[in-house]
Amino acid sequence: MFGIDLQSRVPIYEQLYTKISGLAGRGILSAGDRIPSVRELAKELGVNPNTVSKAYLMLEKDGLIYSVPGRGTFLADDLSIIKINAAEEFRSAVGTARDKGLSRGDLVGIIDDMGVE
Image 1: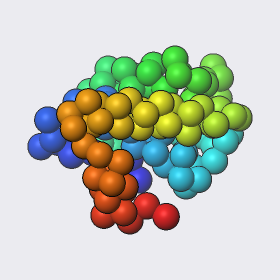
Image 2: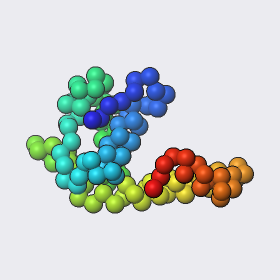
Image 3: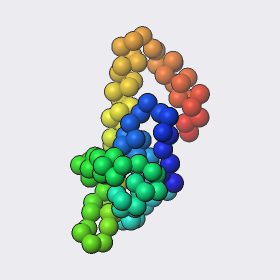
C-alpha cells in the first residue's frame, strides 16, 4: 500500500508523504485510521527508519497525522487540509504555467488529457 520507487529521483521521505496524503485524500485511508509505526514501515519498505520518521514529521507538522504514545500513529480527524494544500499547489502551478505563456485553453486541455472529472 505504501510502495515507493527506489529508482526515483524524488527522495523516499517525499514519496511516503505524497503516498500517505494521497491515500487519505482519495478516501482509501480514513480519519482515525492507524498507520504503521516508523519501525514497521521502515522494515516493510527496506529503508532506514530515519527516512520514515522524516516523512511522519512532515505529515504531523501539516496536521495530517498524530501519535499517541504506546498506541500508535493515526490519521487526523480532519483531513480537509489535504484538499486545501492540493488547491494551493494547483494555483501555484497554474500561475507558473500562465507566466510561461500557457493559455486557459492549454491548461484546460492538460486537465482534460489527465482524465480529471
